[in-house]
Length: 220
Image 1 (tube, rainbow, N blue to C red):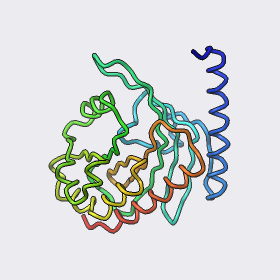
Image 2: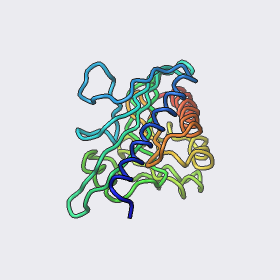
Image 3: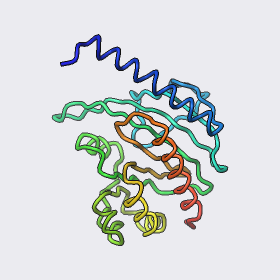
């Protein structure tokens, strides 16, 4: 078992290394790096979505524009607990892109990276959202095997326009290492429980830009 002091030192090294990597990424793409931000501070736009809570901590807050789209990156950590299920610590790298269109329904695509505690918390905090994989995964066998789709049944028709066969197949075959969330005028790309690396950050940027382009073209 790792000694507490050694574990603390490794955590510090991890934080310093992550900061260096994210700052390099920001410089390469002309983004502004701010580091840790207080979610209660008014001067920063908070990245919301399913992982937002009163207890989460956001590090490496980075903002800017890519291919004409406003974007925000955060390294988010939180501990989620649920009665009878205990508590688990989570870490998400999140890249948020702003869309031209607005009022998109709330959709979460989990490429099977989350557990029972996360789902239990999600269903309680988002009343009405259901597992709709059977409806939207039929056109792609690969997508149905690798992903789950959560949305409100009342938004079935709109979600069908958003989650086209092309998007489902591309996510399944090329981008299933990430998870995705759409709502209002936002698309979020998640990398779960992983340290930032240049390749991960650039791939998140690429898939987020691609998804935003596709969703901008949807007529709601």
